[in-house]
Length: 288
Ligand code: SF4
Ligand code: SF4
Image (cartoon, rainbow, N blue to C red):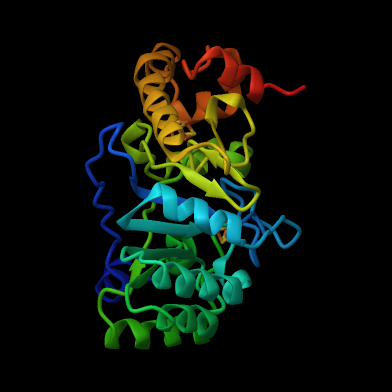
C-alpha cells in the first residue's frame, strides 16, 4: 500500500463542489457521461461491473447535441465508465466539438491511470480538464496498485501541473459487483457517511438518461429520466422528482430497515413505489 500522506501531497483529494441547483432552472450544472463498463481492470468492488468484456459505445452527434441542450454552458461534465483511456480518440472529438459549440465548463475524467500516457494526452487536449484517479488503485488499497512506470509518469505530471490530477474518494457502496464483495472488506471503507451522495444524473452512450451514476447498470424504471428525444426541461423535472423520491421513500425505508440506501436501491428498488414521474411516463418505462 502506498503511504496515503505522500499520495495526498502529489494527488490532492478531489473536492466535489456540489453546485446549487433548483428544478426549473432549465440547464443542469453537472452531468455524468457514461460510455459503458469496458475496462482494463476488473475490480472486486466495481459498481458498474467493469471488465475487459464489458460493453462500450462511442459518443455520437445525437448525444453531443442532447448534452449541449441539457448542460449549463459553465457546467461540469464528468466522464466515466469503464476506463476513459479506452475511448480516447472519441473523447478528444467530444472535447473539441463541445468547445467549438460554446461549452465553457470543465471536463472531469475518472480513470484508473494505468494507461498513463494516453490519459495525459487526453488532459493535454483541453486546458479546462482534470482527472480523478481511482483511489483504490492509486493507493493499492484492496486493489492491485498502479504499475510503477505509470505512477512515476503521473507523479511527474502532477508536480508540473497542479490542479489537473486528483485522488478519488475512498468511499465504496454496495452497488454492482460490490454486492458480492465481502461485508468485512466493505466495512473497512467509508460509505458517504451512510447516506446517498445525491449525484447529478447520467447521460449514457446507449441514449438514455439515468438518475444515478452508481446504479447506472440497473435498468429499474425508478432511475429512468428519459431518452435523447426527451426535452431537457422534462429530464430536469424528472430528476427533481427522483430527488424527492430519495427523501420521501428511499432514505426513510433504508433507515427503517437499518441498511445503507445504496443497498436498498440494489437489492429492493423494484419493491419500492416508483417516483411520481406521471402515469404515462411510467408506462413507457416498464418492459413491454
Ligand atoms: S472500479 Fe474502475 S478500474 Fe476498477 S473495474 Fe471498475 S471502472 Fe475499472
Ligand atoms: S442510494 Fe441509490 S440513488 Fe443514491 S447513490 Fe446509492 S444507488 Fe444511487
